Image 1 (cartoon, rainbow, N blue to C red):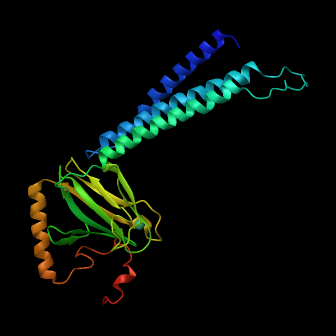
Image 2 (cartoon, protein in one colour):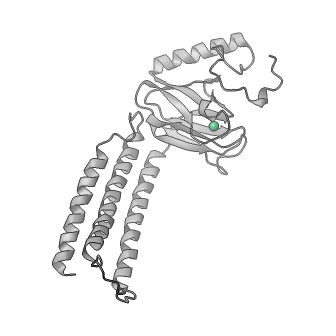
Image 3 (cartoon, rainbow, N blue to C red):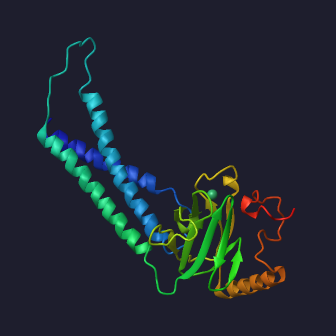
Length: 272
Ligand SMILES: [Cu+2]
């Protein structure tokens, strides 16, 4: 292969990579972005899409060039040339992917450090997962709910824990997803299932469990409401009031139970 051929193939790879990047960046892959963390995460995804597009282009151009250029002529039954080893090529195809992967890893690390940075005034919320329901406890407000209400533009420190199997916390619009492995009482130093997120858009979302956790897995959802500080304070007041009238910590709330997942066995002693 001449130098000119290499240049042509290189140019073609650049072109295919650029076209493929542009096409792949058109769809809005992640949908609505409603947290401070969503920006950097989406940018990271875009960078990975572009890198992958150029790798894809190099592989495809080399493949189709080889198919076309080195095709056996009809009736050619002879063996191929006995080629063994090519040190330069082997060094190149080890070094280049290593550099690409390391660069991507370092960039991901930087983003992760950035989005996981916890501020002084993060609001702690204990999130408890169990087959097949979510419970949210607000230690500072002294309330408990099966809906996640949070004030907008407030950094949250979600302390995730599970009462049974592994579940996974995911609010797509926040881009935050974390498997819940920690059991109650396990210190954060042992299993870190604390997640930091700052919702920055008032809206209603759905929290979905994304770890297949049993028969009721698909029903394991919870309503997430991001609202103004005033609306949040009002909701907290309402929760406190209904908590007082109900007396003990209510297991399931007053809404209709038709769409509710099966009651977990923890409540075994509950009357029918
Ligand atoms: Cu689950």
